[in-house]
Each structure stands twice: as structure tokens, then as C-alpha cells.
Amino acid sequence: MDLRLDELSVDLGGARIVRELTLDVPEGQVVGLVGPNGSGKSTALRCVYRALGPSAGRVLLGGEELSAMSPRHSAQRVAALTQESGSDLDFTVEELVALGRAPHLRGNQPLSARERELCRDSMELLDVAHLAGRGVLELSGGERQRVLVARALVQEPRVLVLDEPTNHLDVRHQLELLSLLRAAGVTVLVVLHDLNLAASACDLIGVLSEGALVDAGSPKEVLTPALLREVFGVEASVVPHPLTGDPQLLYQLPPPRKGLR
Figure 1 (tube, rainbow, N blue to C red):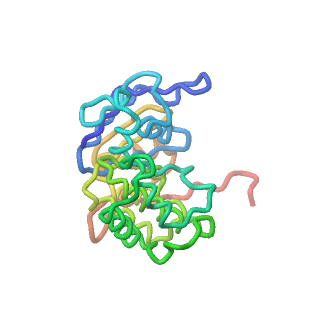
Figure 2 (figure 1 turned 180 degrees about the vertical axis):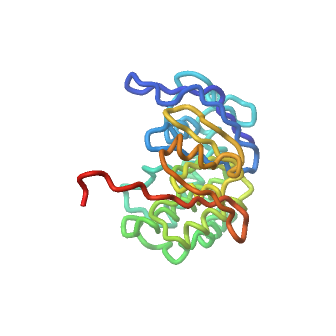
Figure 3 (figure 1 turned 90 degrees about the vertical axis):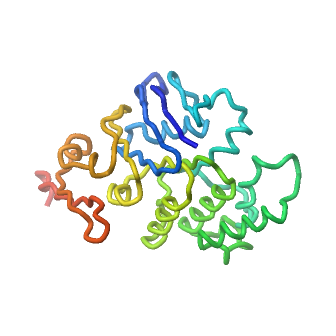
């Protein structure tokens, strides 16, 4: 299922945070949103998983306007992992993962045998099956993050929205998660701060600055020294990865500020 942000604008607290953002996320592709802090990335994502309503413009799922869908209908199609995802209640890992099936169930309907198997498979895939009986509040940040991704996959979404999903993860689990996103076969819109990870994991990248789309295209087209200088204020060389050919950024440290020793 494809996703389109169509001239999306969001006003919060009297300020325009997202400005007429148009971005296409083709079916089955991984599209990354990057940009400096405060550029509107997370705010745009919140409109896709309906935590916010846009002030103008539309979000389209498979050509259908998201705001016209019932919350249940959209929740069966869009799963989200947000920066604030978590649980204040001490569910066990397997209980929290099973909550991913909630949009597909009625009332207290129990999980079917297929759904229980789906939960087990998802926990295995995210390397948290050994934690199934543990309380979520006992877990490290990285373990909890992987449990939340497992819950999102159990939802069987057509579109997966992730805001900084590699937060708290060690290098191994960062790479495994991004590889999983590439192989999942669902449409993915993901915010990433690490531009090298974005270059490796994403089919397309959209760059935001001050709420507006500056550029969009393949990592090779978008991640140029000129753009990095303009948007991020850094000097960087862009070189091909020796194994994959993906662009990799080598940053140059700025000179120390006067007065610092």
C-alpha cells in the first residue's frame, strides 16, 4: 500500500511546524525522513498515525484519505513506533507483543492459534523470545525497543511508521532492524538521525528543514556535500561504501570555538 503526504501543513502553538509537505512513499519501499532537530520530522509522522490532525493538506493511504477512515480501519493498516512508545504497566513481553493484534480483535476475543504463532515468530525475529515471561519494566532500553518493534510487526500493517527506531540499540541490533525493514515487504516511513544508516537502509530519502521539504530522491542523489552544508551546517566528504556502494559520509570536525581550551 502506498502512502502520500499531500501538501501537509501542521500548526502548533501558533507556529507552523510543517509547511506544505508533499512526499510519496511507494508501496513496499523504505523512505527515510532526515533533517536537523526541530525540522518537523516527528510532527509529520504523527499525522500518519493520527496522533495529530493536519492543519491543511491530506494523508492518503492507497489513494484513500486517512481522515475518512475509522480509527479501527486505519489501525489495521498503519502501525507506529514512536519516540514515546512504552508502557507504564508491567505487562510481560509476550502480553505486550500480543497487544499488536488489538485492532483485529473484537472485545475480549482470544488470540487464535495462528495469532499466537505470529507473536512467537515476531519475538524470535526481534531476538526477544527468551524474554517472553519478563516484565517490560525490567528490560533495558534496547530490549524494550525490540519488543515494541515486534508488537508493531504482529499488527501485520500495510504501512509501518517508525520514529528513531534505532534509539537505544547496539550496533548489531541497529543493523539487524534496518535489514529487517528492507526485507519486510511493507511500506515504511522512518525518521533517522544517523545519515549513514539512512543511506544504507532507505530506498528514498526526504530532507526537511524548518518544516519544508528541501530535497527528495535516492541517497546518492540527496546526500551531497552541498546539501549537508546547507541543511545541517557540516562539512563532509561523501564516499561509496566499499562493499555496497551506498554513500557514506565522512564528517570534518569544526575548529574549536574561541574561549574553549
